[in-house]
Structures are given as structure tokens and as C-alpha cells.
Amino acid sequence: MSEFFHMGGYAAFVWPCMALAVVVLGWNVLAARRLHALARERALRRTAAGKGAP
Amino acid sequence: MNWTWFHKLASPPHAYRIAGSLTPWFGWPAFVLIAVGLFGGLVLAPADYQQGDAFRIVYVHAPSAWLSMFVYGTMAAAAAIGLIWRIKLAHAVAAASAPVGASFTVLALATGSIWGKPMWGTWWVWDARLTSELLLLFLYAGVIALRGSIDDRGRADRASALLAIVGVVNLPIIHYSVNWWNTLHQASTLTKLGKPSMAGGMLWPLLTMLLGFTLYFGAVLLVRLRGEILLRERDASWLRTVLAR
Amino acid sequence: MTRTGFLGAAWLAYRRDLVLALRHWGQVAQPLIFFVMITTLFPLALDPQLAELRRIAAGILWVAALLASLLGLELLFRSDHADGTLEQMCLSGQPLSVLALAKGLAHWTVCGLPIVLLTPFVATGIGVPFEAVGTAMQSLALGTGILSALGAIGSALTLGLRRGSLLLGLLVLPLAMPALIFGARAIDLSIHGDTARGPLLLLAAMLVLALTLAPPAVAAALRISAE
Image (cartoon, rainbow over all chains, first blue to last red; front, side, top):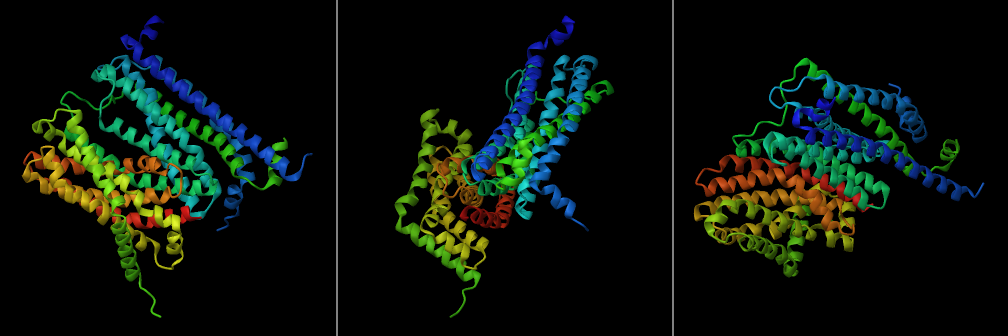
């Protein structure tokens, strides 16, 4: 198991790369969700303002 | 030929709904493929003869480099469709793709750079692949910056679409020039960035990761696309029915 | 009343830009001075021995020409956009890409050509041997031409934007990198006494490509920006 983490001596290179990949994958998901939420909010405000408050 | 299905698809309310229902069909397979690919690459695959375990970086480097180019192609194609046929949805796809592609270009550069240290002894090397990736990042930055600096969304879409197309026309020229330049200046000790000859046990995780990353892009694109559609919509009626849910 | 053909319109546009530039020759001189200044930075920042500078002279010349040309792109559409002439051009019924080509040519005459003419002096100052100066001029002539064409696209896309000049650099420089690679290589070969024919021909091919594809792109960009 520790051999796995050791990565043949290259651990200091392999694991940061994996970590960066996780960060980028995660960021894309979060950013996409945030964009969608922001756009929904703006659209809701636009429609509420246009037709008067419900 | 009856094109009504196409126009229906390109209409914002439909596209919005379809994007929503398609997302899990891309997202979950992507998650599984990436998990399986990482397990195969990090655990199952044998260590490389020359590079040892360091070669395992390829399992994130190659898919991100692939995505950086695939996404740019998608963005440029969507830009062309948006400009030529004036379809707002296409511009929305281009706008949604750009930041995703840029992030994977950064990842490709970072992992490529880190991989270079144990291989060549330096944190950076001006080899053809890394330099091309860097230029690609500049192209992405230009498209994103241009879109961001124009307030009118229609003009922003069309201007960045034109720039994306100009960029894609330049890509083969850039690729050829950088390759040629690199052959002139290649230090004798340099080898091409890490593609070890891949035995079977090494190859299938790589293909799995490539497919997984591509499906992942599909899922992220669909979510961003919904946001971009909403940002571009003025007609209130369909918005209210869809958003009320 | 005779209708002006597109060649006549192109000549009028070219001549007009030239006349306007001559009237404001102070503005036109700025990119030139910038070119000389940038070149001067390198001996100051590095070893001023000509033998040392000679090794990087090709790069210095090209970088300086690129950056100075970027500055000069300001002149291309901005004043026409500001006073409404550009709109008139779009509405004139003349093919917009031809007018764009004419304006680009005028811009090169006023900005790129002077850089080429200054090159012998600047190049000698950074150690380029006399025999290589001719190649340097050819390389920069082709290069500034390519820059004018590509820069026109960027200039048209960023019309009227605040801080458009910063953005312009970001847009145009990546597109200019292939030309930089071959152009600097040509000068470097010549400095070492070898023939620069290969890179120069490639550079010329790039220029032809740029002159063919850029004008329609500029016209499209102008229409996008004019709305």
C-alpha cells in the first residue's frame, strides 16, 4: 500500500498532478452550477420585474 | 428534408429542457469511466521500463491535452454555426465551452511541466507540444477576454465567434511553425514528451480516461449551456413556466 | 454622374489615409520611435558588446517591430470610427473588404514601411553585419505586412472598447507567432552567413495568405462592431 503512495520515488510528481486534475474537474462542475444558478436568478428577476410582482 | 426538428431543437426552451435531461446521461458515465480509468492507470498498469511510475501522469495529462484541443474545435464549430446561420444557441455553446477548454489547457500545461521535471530535469522546456499548448491558452484567453469586454451580448457573441474562427484557421499554421522551430533548437538530450510505447495494460486505462474526460466535458457543457441560454433569453413567458418548477 | 468602381474607391481610401497621416505625422512617428526605443532597451539591459547582441539581434528586431506595429494599429480605424467615416464606408455600397485592404495598405505604408527603412540603422546598432541587413529588411517588410493584416482584424474587433489597445495585443500576438518564428529565423541565418531563402519564402506565403483571408474577416468584424 505504501508502495502505491510511494510511486517508485516519483510520488512528489504524480500525486500533485492527480490533485490538480481533481481540482480542475471539481472547479468546472462548481463553476457550471454557479453560472446556471446566477442565470436563473437574473432571469427570475427579469420576468418578475417585467410582468409585475405575483 | 424536413428541418422542423432542428429548429425545434435550437429553440431556447427546448434546448434548455433537453440539456437538463441529458446531463446525467453524460455525467454518471463520465464519473464511472474516470474512476475506472484512474484505478486502471494508477494501480493496475505496470510501471514503465524507462520512466517508472512517473509515466502515470499521462493518465491526466493526455486527456486534458486532448480536451484542450477538442473543446477549441467545438467552440470554433459552434461559433461558425452561430455566425453563419445566426443561431443564438450556437453562440451559447461557444460561450459555455471557452472557460472549460481554457481550464484543461492550464491543466495540460501544469501536468506537462511537472512531468518534465523528473524526465528532463527542468520545470519547463520549450518543446513543441508544451509551446503549442501555451499558444492555445493565449488563443483561449483572447476569446474569453474579448467576450468579456463587450457589454452588448449580441456583439460580444459575434466578435468572439469571429476571433475563434480566425484562431482555428491559424491553429495548423501555429502547429506546423512550432514543430519546425522545435526541430531546429532541440537539445540533443531531449526526448519527446513521455509517450512510452504502450503495452495493453497501459493503454486501456488511457482510452478510458480519454472517453471519460470527453463525456465529462459533455456534462459540464450542458450545465453551462443552460445558464448561457437563460442569460440570452428575453421572452418572459417560457422562462416563467420553466423556472417556476 | 459616374459611379466609382471599387478600384477607384480603394485608391481614394488609400490616398485619404495617407494624406491624413501626413497631416498628423507626429502621431505617425510614435510607433517608429517606439521601435528604436525597444531596440535600445536590450543593450542597456544586457551586455552591450556587439558580438553578444548579434546572437539575439534577430529576435530583438522582430520583437521591437511587433510591439511597435501593435502601437501603430491604433491609427487604423479609431479616428474613422470616431467621426463616422467608417459607417459611411459600410453603407457606401463598395465592397468593404476592398476598402479594408486599401486602409491596411495605407497603414503599412505609414507604419510598417518606415520601420523597414529604419532597420539598417537599428540593426547595425545591435551588431547585425552589413551583409545581413538586406535580409533583415526583407524579413521585416514581410512581417510588418502580416502584422498589419492580422492587426486589422484585431483592431476591427475591438473598435470603441475601453482599454481596447491592451486587448488588441492579447488578440494579435498569438496569431503573429508563426511569422515571428520564420522571420527571426531568416535574419538569424543571414547573420551566420547562410541563405535565408526558405524562411523568407514561407514568410511571403504567410503574407499572401493574410492578404487573401484578412480583408473579408476585417469587413465582417467591422460590421459586427458597427452595430
